[in-house]
Length: 289
Image (cartoon, rainbow, N blue to C red; front, side):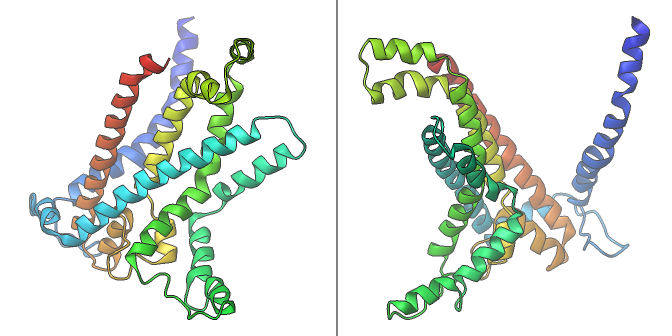
């Protein structure tokens, strides 16, 4: 029996090697780079201690990107829960074409974020489809991507539209796992639909809600591809997330050390937020379940 366990443990070795090589080693090397003034290309660099981390506190563009990152993360998560749960409730019943509709709603999640960003870019640019519609009504074309008040919420809408199908699948799985006996008992007691939803469906969907929120929140906080394709972070730095800010700092500004420091700031942000959200969920889990 012990030999079987030893053979089974050996099977973990390739996975552990890949984990160390592709995740742990780059993480530690990135931490080392964050303490240097390396430009990302030169063989020569020097250690500057906490200089890059102190620079973060003074960098206005970092705080603009931080604000946008929080808006992208929490805004997308909020919209995706509303859209995902609403769609799941509508598609949970049995009717003709249900599976086809589910597939169509989930399809955008299979499209690359870069492609989705370029699709919306062609729609919203000055000579794009939206302005063609505006011209039909005799109005002047609009610079849709020139205003932060328009572009930043647009990013949230695009990200939510692309990935709310994932939330829909999670909620559908949760709805189909609820025993029908609860609904039958509620109907016998004469409970109305809103009461059934808030007293039975919603509490029993709490695990699905936790899963969906965590997945959507982490994805929103790491938003990169749509921003890069749609605006490139512009105009200026007004639509950057921390992920795109890291990219432009490394390649455009050739400051790999500072980019690594911002990367660890993003890592810390996601870690703190996800742990805090998990604590809130765990605290309320007993109350709902």
